[in-house]
Image: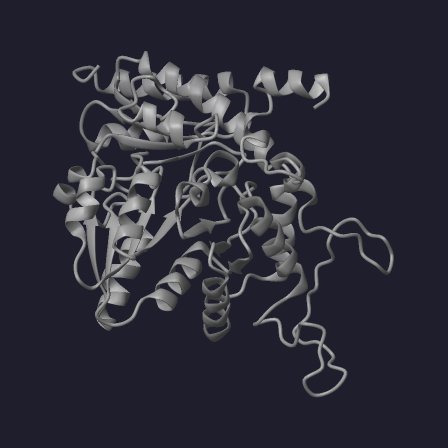
Length: 415
């Protein structure tokens, strides 16, 4: 290995890029740019064309070039799938119109009436709605358990359990699940383990390397990263599962559009750079929030006092992402007034974009959930979720600081 390269590796500047490199394979940063991409053979264009077409000419019956109808497959979407597969070291990927379309296809592919699912107790609300309000009507049941304790997963297994679905870090509390330990349990009981890796992506967490069978994404978030698209993806280590996902997608008609796939391809090129800066900004902001007298708790896996810090150091690839959760002192009105007082941070129900986005889960993403149940899983009235963007961290801190001052002035008894 050349000396200059050794020095770079020692410097730590390339942690995300090099931690998952295999022999004769480009580093992660390079794959984000080049994987799956080939210059157009007709004119040499470097960017993948947008194949905005419904149907494809076939030379004769049964003689096509791999495409017949864009509900089944599309060349632009296929390039995105090839890139995602190479980033995850998976045989292939299947892209969907939304993240929930991907989760729905997962459920409809691997589950049948009478099956049981074990799901993280803290998980995206759309996943809960799918399990409880849609799949339950078809005889699928779910148990929500604190998967941060592997023993809880063991205890939740029933004779008809088929799937373990975990989200780590969890939305919005950032609670972690030890993927490797849960994988040992799933394999012992012949269960499928699916990991929602939306918060960290393959740049910061490698579920397949830790034993997961399936990785699932809302590509809307960090993979696109620019608030420009909605999309989802599923990848499995077993290619027969990938083929089954594509069959389900064709039946449902939930393929991603070519234009959204094209935009997502552009976003991926800067994925490792963005996540590195998201993480650095989040680390600085989390440290600031810990110093404010109005802040009761700060949850960020990069903080030494985070309850699962050792697991985060072991499971994450050198950084911990751009999501922070923090709890304000006082009643629910404190949280509402705080997010109404921010200016730079944008009030929006999304995450993973270059802009800093802020939400109040108790009144927004998790508002429909009963307060007792919500607080049981750590979503208290004062909890704030902050998706840290790529602005200068001092500007974000100044905005949060002035909003905290507004609340402290109004609620002097809390401050």
